[in-house]
Length: 319
Ligand code: SF4
Image (cartoon, rainbow, N blue to C red; front, side):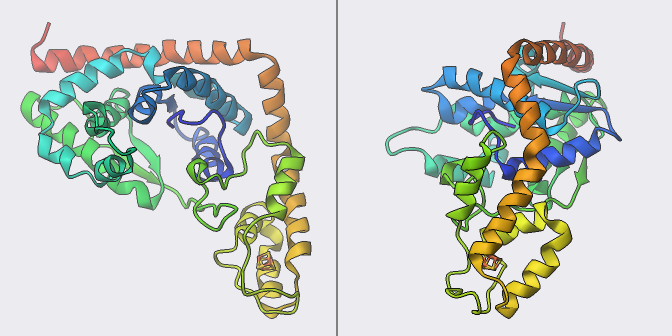
């Protein structure tokens, strides 16, 4: 995850973190906070990235990532990422990068007058280095993210073609990942300012849900509603799963008002997040333990990354 923000929202939690916590029981995991990537959009505020990286690590631990099972570390603490990025940048044709749709999107979203940097274009090359440095079996992704990994595979194939089998063909570790609807009805995102954060207090959570977007055609309790696209129903379906079918049925039948629906939703969300929020508050009180996790994680990551780089250099015939 990129530390473009210092706290993770429920979209990050349900779209990735919650899944990683499950996967760590089956796989040896590497969870990298990619601070160098954040520079592609935050070049004027690098000090914020450092602060944000700590916040992301806190949320990782609060959500249940266990540093005994998952190597949690910050990208810039393992310099091998930069070395592999450089070598990959030599084997990656420019045309591959220019046609990446996210490059075009990001370039178009830059503030007027700002030029796209070399780093922005090379972003997928650094991402390939982040992944292949650990020669993993696979990467956990939602179905919509599958195309993002294709360039990593292409770079690995090209490297292996040029220098012999060194890097693996990575798999997509697919999971059903819910898309959280933000408070305004769009996808939950920090940039839309429509998110509920793990770090929010119960009061903030309640206030946000009370003001959330619902079905605009449902004015009175007995108007039939359309839960699809309703931010509150999206929360019910994750945090009040056992009653979500009932919520949907009552909403459609005009047997449920939005205000009472929101109250029930607030209770489910707050109850569900309570243990996580308690853990988060404890971690913030003792930042030393978070820094220790990150240091130990970087040491463990460096050991694996060092072995990969030794093989990569050997395959290329470099000193
Ligand atoms: S009743 Fe609940 S699910 Fe239906 S529109 Fe209102 S808030 Fe959304």
